[in-house]
Length: 225
Image 1 (spheres, rainbow, N blue to C red):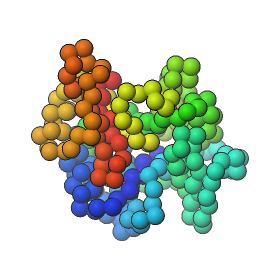
Image 2: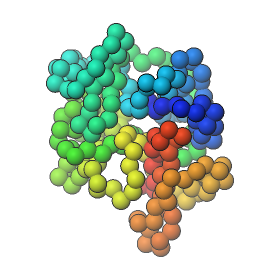
Image 3: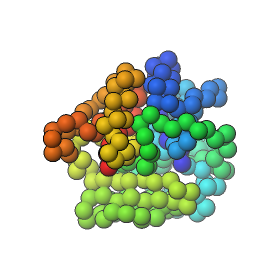
Image 4: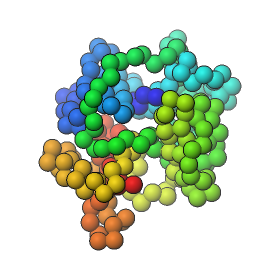
């Protein structure tokens, strides 16, 4: 799974990801931001949109029924479908390209998957199951489910409006436990703009969770758990 952001200001976007300790690759028609736990890409064309990229060869299932039953747009190189959450999913032919592994650990800590908000968790679960994901944790009745696939990719879906903080759809989530205060200090020290400081989960009323956004508004949840 590759996460796709957009890029309006190349200099600002490259600076943001470099500050987060991602390795930046310029592949001509797109930039790739790599770490040892998550990979993002940003195409340089202005018609590109945020979403999730999956390769049909990696899914290992017949996705045509899902394509036909979903709102979709098809070109010679890709099929775009809309998840029940409203997030765009890009389905490409073949398998994901193999890039050299990097040792870079994100400044924001331990990556635990992509997060989405949805009005209907049961429809979201059925959608992602047709793309090779299986229920791993959570309960739709309680407003949160987490699904994973054979390659270890994780997608968590929350009921829309349940989370007491801003939510870009999709966003990346990082959990750091008791080390999150230290991570937040590193974010401040690197002069990375914080979109939202969260105190609602802290008994002491301190900022123990934060939300970041890249220059085009792609969200990063930097949480203790």
